[in-house]
Image 1: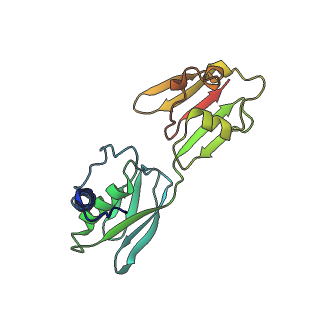
Image 2: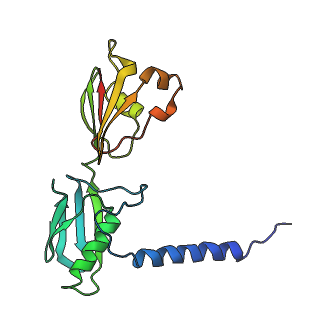
Image 3: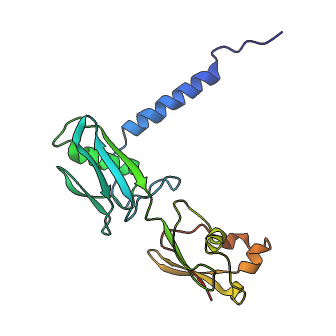
Length: 198
């Protein structure tokens, strides 16, 4: 005899969770530029292409590019900072600024093209150069994209140069990582990282 599954406590928990998520998204406060967004969400950067639109107003729907200074320009509000924020955070900031002109405006920000997530692989690899990766990758994946090491590469002296708040030189031993040793060296790359293969 089959057991019948009706509306139970688990269903109620799922519904309450969905409602709480929706409510928290509506009440997100204006975020300062230096706030670190959730690392699981894509962080906007220079050269990314966005579509910013205000519902029911075609004159306020625009495709914009994040400039090298990290800002975008949008009608009514002028320049607003975008780099370093998620699309959701930028959307909240635009909504607050545009509310001075259009109360209750419904703003949408969509990422059309990811152009800012770049890494660089230089030195003794088959295809050195700049790589727009579109997602987070690790060192081994980047070296694979660059066609792998050349025969005379110094595989145990690879360095990742990172220009963050503090400049870093991170050592990488390809041979050990390839053999399953020191897997912690196979770090996730950050925007602008340079891998140098001597």
